[in-house]
Length: 104
Image 1: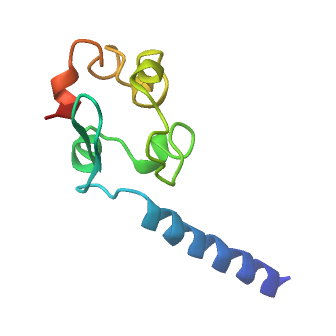
Image 2: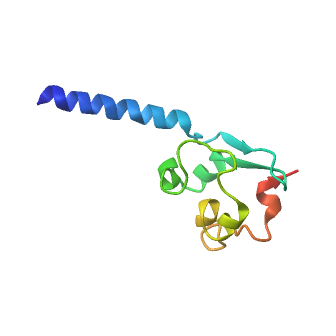
């Protein structure tokens, strides 16, 4: 019983580090390139400073693995992905604030 518990804990501990390796840690940035409106930079620091933790969005809103072209502005404006929070209530709305995320 003790060996089973230790094995489970070891696997859980290892998975924490695998998940962390795939995520953008606070203070780091992830750049989505080649969008029609310009690059979009996700700032882990800005989101951490707002009190958010990685698990607030991962994996329920965003998968842990980055997949280019996975989501669109139409989906975001419908309240999916970034639009879950960037709706004008919890955080600034995406509509009319293009330059806050898109950099030419």
